[in-house]
Image (cartoon, rainbow, N blue to C red; front, side, top):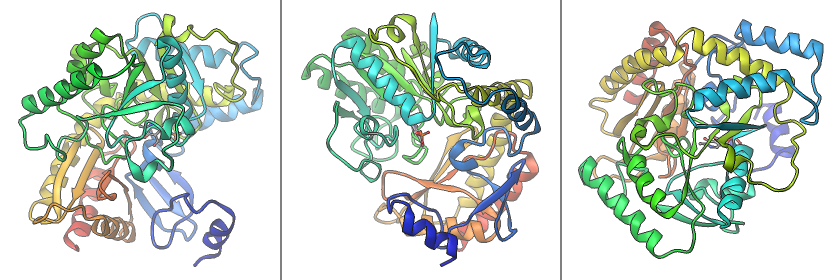
Length: 426
Ligand SMILES: Cc1ncc(COP(=O)(O)O)c(C=O)c1O
């Protein structure tokens, strides 16, 4: 065991998961590459969990951070903060939510926690609907709406949560149905559930489940859900922590794959917007955002340095049409990965959109999840210079591919070749 790993193990919690038999220390990065402490270079197809959105060490972001740090690092929400107002204005416009208000946090967990606070206060109910196989964060409230046992360490919760069908297309009781029948069955289940419950505050859902292994429902399912929710006055929270900012290629937000629904009542974001600086946040219509009748502050939320980074990063993303790049290069990458997976018996499905691609591994005969195979591919890819991620509600048996959105065609080809070799080595 290398010494940093031993020190990590002796001072940090056991439940802080690390990748790889021999965990690596990443010391620096540039573009779509990172280097470890032993000087090995890797093509980065995971971006520190979908967070390096544009590129590593992007000069525009680095400069904005350094310049802001040279002026002032911290002031708190008690004082006017120009970069915070400017980023809020841009996100409010981009959100599609009418009369939008934005509140900044320091993580996705805290963003979802705030959304849950708003929805429950607005509706006067602590009953929440969440999707099976979901992940919404690590705090007491968010593990209580996380429908994935591996990531939800307690059954205690300030919320009463009911888990809904529909987010996992390829498994579960409705898996064999056509898209249309699948959606009908999930909607009927939701209707039935709401008929048996007290007043419900909100449904929280990831348009594409991240930690769950990049699984998603048929397009339009959340629009169909919305019609039912509206009839019951139930709010819709779209957790865009992984799916926001154009990562899915076709859309800027994941909810837009269910566009007939119109924008959600609340939208949460984090990860990519700060390119690694800690920014999270929630967007909601003014009447929902302003429903709280007590003061609030955030010491660190919206801090000037993170906001300057967010503005520079978002500006770069939009100016360089990285959503379009995610669509084009992601389209090519998924094609290459489908070809690479053809003939590998353990590959059950290659799925996703844009630069958010999942490869599920399972026993070809029984359909049982194959977590050891997923770990083996992860290791093999690293040995050959490629970092990817893992996920999935079924014993972590899906590989997750989510490079920075500036990925080039040559890098996509290179990464696909490494993955092909790793899959074929199974
Ligand atoms: C969909 C989703 N929501 C919320 C979170 C929590 O974000 P954070 O780790 O920044 O607290 C995550 C993190 O992976 C996520 O994937």
